[in-house]
Amino acid sequence: MNSQSLFKQHFNYSAVSSSEAHGRVNLIGEHTDYNKGFVLPTLIEQKIEVSLSPRLDSKIVGISEEFGEKTVLSDSNTDGTWIDFVRGALYYMAKEGQLIKGLNIAVVSSIPTGSGLSSSAALEIAILRALCQMVGHELSSTKIAKIGQLIEHHFIGTFCGIMDQMSSSKSKFGQVLFLDCENLNTEIVPIFEDYTFIIIHSGSTRKLSEGLYNERKRETEIASKSLNISSLRHAEISDLNIIKDPKIFRRARHVITENVRVLKAVQFLKDNNAQAFGNLMNESHISMDKDYEISSPELNHIVKTAQSNGALGARLTGAGFGGCTVVLSSNTRRDDIIKKILEHCPKSYLVTNIGQNIAPSKNE
Ligand code: ADP
Ligand code: MG
Image 1 (cartoon, helix red, strand yellow):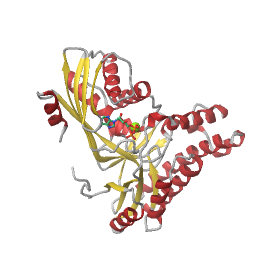
Image 2: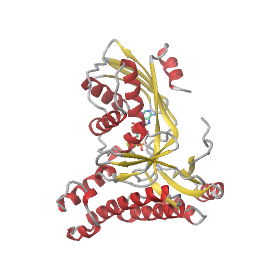
Image 3: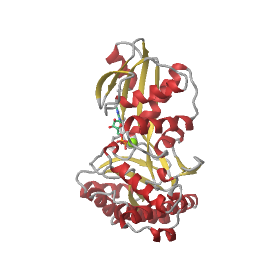
Image 4: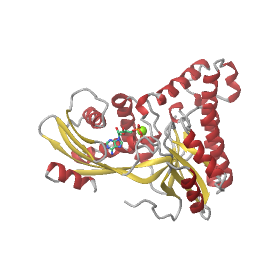
């Protein structure tokens, strides 16, 4: 079902405005965005669609195919449910001079949630796009991304960087977005020709607002404070000797080495050097497992299985603590690698394949 049909079914009339936004997979550059570093995401075919109409009273009435019904007063306090995303969007639209009293909204999604594919950012961007369309207000894609991040910080409680929102708001299909999270400069890099990025879900999920993500962010803030710099973006490995706490040292080492890996990965992408790109993915996974401690036995098992069955590289993707892996394979090895992973990792499933000339793998 699409969001218009869900809206009509639930509210008994047609929505005035509809929009959508895609999820993303980050190819490399994890937990670097809130440290003002580099990331390399690309869109996935899975997306969130919203349809909405204004109300005359000051209620928000929401229906999400996945998260159910919810009715609240638009100026009431956050309650930890998905309707907080709508509350936040209305709050920031009002700051833009667009006061929207109440809203009926229907949400339909094909993005697995809590899986590192950024359903939350897609939801923010889709709602903001639909609201702008509804009231005839123009916002740039960067401004929409920034508002999405503010919603996440102040209405959800996840102190995320800007990658997910920028990716969902700015990227186009088949493009890789090289994003500098300090100045928001972007460069579009084409994806490999004869290789596929395979996205495999580990079968376990997590909720970012539950705290582990924010804990990692605090740890890196402690590291940059000890080094007397504004963010780890400006640190080098040789600076780390003065950090005495071994855990903080390891967290900082991940961020610093990961930034270097992203810069190399961009070059390897441009050079069509998938082998070297894959090696960086493998190194990135080790760093996330050992230094940043955001992997899980299931994620490690998928990564190992991929590597021992001919993948060029494999790593967890997204915030970690469950969720998805991204595996790089030649187009010829792809189907066999997928088969081996699904056979050996019982809870895992294929989310999508990304590459040039690849037909969508998911039935929508
Ligand atoms: P991720 O962004 O990696 O998927 P998060 O923990 O950041 O994971 O966000 C997941 C949250 O986003 C969900 O708990 C829910 O509040 C919201 N969300 C995602 N998809 C939907 C949907 N289809 N309907 C309503 N809320 C959604
Ligand atoms: Mg999220």
